[in-house]
Amino acid sequence: MTPRSDGMTPRPGDGITARPSDGAARRVGLGEGDRGTTSGSESDGAPGPGDVASLLRSSARASVWLPVDGVSMLPTISAGSQVRVKAQARGPRIAEIWAFCDTNGLVVVHRYRRRGPQRQSVFRGDNVPWHDPPVDESRLIGRVTHVRRGNAIRRIAISERLRWIGRRLWQRILRDTTNGSRRTQR
Image: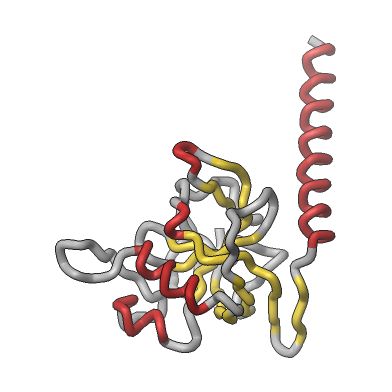
């Protein structure tokens, strides 16, 4: 795997990390570092992941542009891009790209895969083989509607979502037919 820009190798739970460009999240305790992490707990008075998500969700009511870093969403979103996030009144739908806070308070941008245990959302990057840990509704920020790379802005439309579903379906069909033909040859 390719090292991340901070020199660490990707691991489960890593994703494209978004850092608010307006600095608002840092004022509530995201830390001074580039990655903006927080452990946050009620005992130390620091905001937790749900607080960070709530703040960003309120900023994203109209929409907010967030810079992203990482390779987990290649080729859809590349490092150095910005994503436009819009808060949603509804939960995520299959194949939509969403921003959410992980358990450390980092903002992650990944694709919604399925409903998990206790009605939590399960996400996964397009370029990684593992799913993220289930995400509570309180940590959801909003749906990614656009990607900006330099001066080019690309809308994340229903057609892209349908193409992604079609590719996954085709891969499953190929895998199942390959596995089926192996079984009949034995």
